[in-house]
Length: 501
Ligand code: NAI
Ligand code: MG
Image 1 (cartoon, helix red, strand yellow):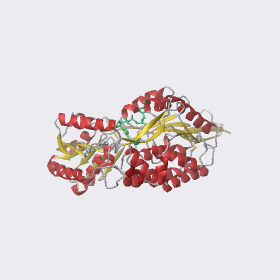
Image 2 (cartoon, rainbow, N blue to C red):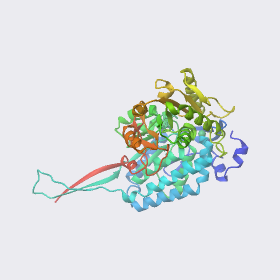
Image 3 (cartoon, rainbow, N blue to C red):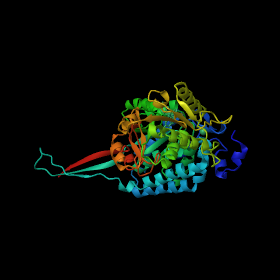
Image 4 (cartoon, protein in one colour):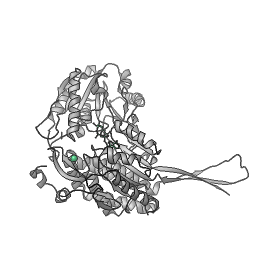
């Protein structure tokens, strides 16, 4: 169990929420699973059980999709005035803000992350994003088309386009930013007039379920938002093959992304995929190291490296290698390690035993392939899933740790000589999610940014995400964008209307 001392300092609403088994949200009602099954959600800082959660399966997905379908076909949501839809979304954002501390505590408990960072980053950006998306319903519009129709010269035509919601969306999210991913998915679905069945990750269902409570209070019609916790191969798979689901939006591993694209092909669903990464952070020879070294450290160690766009391949010029390695090791060794409910702890547990084992396996593989262990490399403590911030030095392109996504607090440092080669080195990966370059020279920025094959390129920063800035991958990091106006594109159909006078 989570320790009593940890629990007694929590807000009473947080304590209430985890004091009885959590149900699933179907058609505006909280219900147990059809099978009656539940699963445990765990506290990664102890490995203890926080609370049981209803375990959704195919039958629950069927019920939820039917509710979402009915809400879409016959319910008031898609036909509601845009201003009324906006009001519901603003109400949800206000409720999230009122309950932000509770969401942060639940996130820290369920995922393990630092509670203060969760409040300031995960929860705040989630609230901001719902507000950002709440501004769109009144601004989604088509065009008037200047038609010619050469084979009907005597007729007059009026042509225009309508933007319409794609329909019922299945949304499957991961465990690394549970509230934020939930907001990214719900925000755009709601703004576009879709209805949704959302499946949170089995490791971290609690904040999505809490947001479900707030959805009920915000006055959305029944069936617009359904939340089904459960496992990927059961509940998730049922969603991706369901005939009544029009679109699947997925964030998670590239491996599962490929399975989902194939599963969704049978019914030709609209699909958007935000997948894994192996993002380069590139220190150029002229970089300001006072900024670049702490920047490179935070690019990988933020959220224990469980970030799809983490700067996991660090490129350092030969001439600066020793200085950068020394500074980076100092930063890594200075980070306080411990449970996320104590905000002083900057390195928190990985999300699960499975993730801990994967990351430790990669560290061993790096060691075996000849990387230097410059810092970290070990477990911390004897319970929970803590791993020290780890720096693997003198790595090269052929090592497994450089080629594969580790998704933990492990950076692979590679030396380079020639700036002219750097874009090629950076692009030497199947992924293309993010990249950062660290330089004071604007001509470096102008030359290198267009050569990098990635959905986001940061200059003198890394991992900066904003509600207005589209985020998504190139290559095997996926397709379709979250955030920004672009996020709406894949949730909207374009209907052409042609009227002959
Ligand atoms: P995952 O991709 O298996 O899980 C993400 C979501 O997909 C969860 O909700 C899961 O239940 C669901 N899912 C799994 N199999 C499914 C299926 N067959 N059909 C439908 N839904 C399914 O990720 P996992 O196993 O938790 O982590 C493994 C690795 O994936 C990590 O080590 C990391 O490298 C990568 N990952 C990347 C993320 C990102 O944001 N890019 C997020 C999470 C994991
Ligand atoms: Mg958990």
